[in-house]
Length: 282
Image 1 (spheres, rainbow, N blue to C red):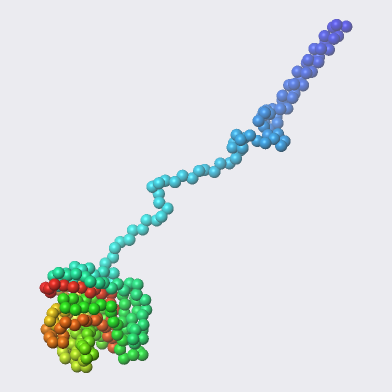
Image 2: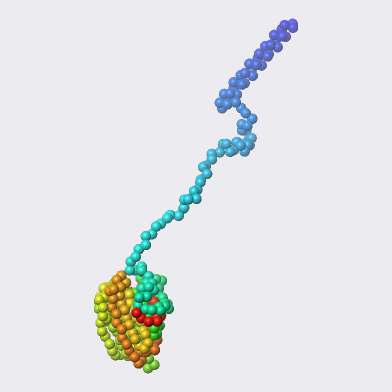
C-alpha cells in the first residue's frame, strides 16, 4: 500500500512539472516575448515612461544666431542728374559769406491749381509748369522773397523752343510792376520790364546753349543799390556758363522781390529752389 502511494505522488509531481513546462512554452510564444508586469492589460493606464517610449518624437528645430530671416539687399549708388541734390558748395564759388535762408523740396508736391487753372504738377521729385490750352499764359509764384545781398538758386530744365520767363517781381507804390530776370531760350536772354515797357533785352554772354530737357543751374542775385546778376551753368561742367550783370538805380533800389515763372508755350521743370544771403559776390 505504501509503495502505491509513493508511486502516485511521483506521478503527480511529474505531471505538475510537465504542466509548468508547457505553460512556460506557451508564454514565450505570445508576442514573441515573455509577459512582464509593465505590459498594458485591459483598461490599465500606461505609465509615464511607457507613454514617452511609445510616442513618435518630432525633431526639435534649431536656429543659428548667424542666420537672418531677412534678405540682405545691396544697392549700388547711382549718380544721375535727376537724383543729384544741390549742395551749398555748388554756389559757394560765386559768393563770400554765403548762408542758406530756406530750401524748397518738390518731392512731395501734389498737383496744384493756380490763378490760371492747373499750372504745375509733380513728377519724379520736381514740379513742371506747363502751358495751358485754356489760358494765354500760366504763372507760378514761389514762396520766396529777397532783398539786397540776397538771391535764389534753382535747378531747371526747359523744352526748346518755348516762351518762358524766370524773374524777380516787385511793385511800386503806384502799382507799377518791376521785373528783372532771364528768358531760358537756347541762347538765354536778359528780361527787364518796368510797367508795360520792356526797357532792356540782351543775350547773356557765355558759351552755354540750353538743350531741351537737360538740367541746368542758375542764380539770380541783387546787391544795393539796384545791382542785378544772373549766372547760368551746366552742373556737369561748371566752366560751361553764361553770366550777366546790370546796374540800375532809382526805383530799382531797396525793394522786396518775389520769384515768378511765366509759361506761354512749352514747359519748365524745377527740381530744387534755395533762397540765400551773401556778403559779396566773387
